[in-house]
Image (cartoon, rainbow, N blue to C red; front, side):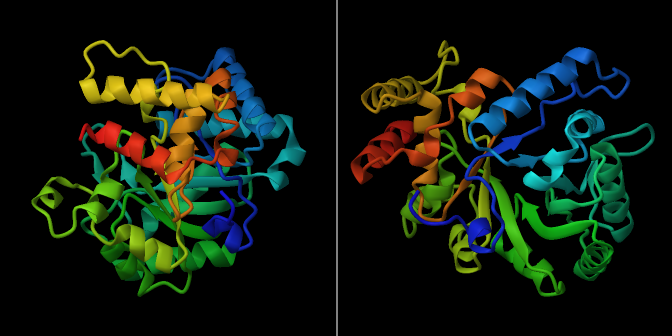
Length: 322
């Protein structure tokens, strides 16, 4: 990418790739403790990320029931000077099912404030660089959200705010009541989840009925200089080494095409898959979900790869199967 991504345009010196930390800490059973192996896995993932220039790390209060943040907090404790050279992002708003309580979304002021305090304690830090509201709460009161944001900003606990998995209308509603801008929107986008492109391509066509991506979201975020982040950008390895047994003809052909481009450009399939996503002029920031050091290192070339418009179209068409 030749131009600065939106976060960089705002003076936030974030890397073009983000390491997603959802897999740190083992399984999602809170009764199972964090082990020495989990800390070793986290340490190896962190070292690999730093080696390829990643300085931004994505968390959520629910990831492995808080264990992911605890593992990362221990790594920061081992290297205290690291905190000021990285950008920490976390999320809140999803509440897991507990005994006697349903799973639900919760953007109440009380829950947001309590969640941030928990994240700060687990990470062992005094502030979060960016807090995202994780998924839309159907009972959201935008004035209550604005009050929570105001308190978190004034206390120094959170420096910037954003959302995840929201449409332009949902962001506009929250923004209308908040003095703080929402500077990130994290959505599922990848070579296997192309509805972020399809929605625009199929305007005024019957095929538009098949798209699940909210219309106008890409354009709104670009107009407001909101950083679009992609979760699942590697498509769970679908085009970069995962077994293709039972997969569709389109997936098999796309994986072959990705491999061909990787060979031609002397890089890895992971880098090609990410480069395709990052070629979008919105300046999408992929959040890599793996903690496998080898796969993290395989993403190194993505920001510097230059695909042609023809390359991009061949990959897009192959993935869609038409």
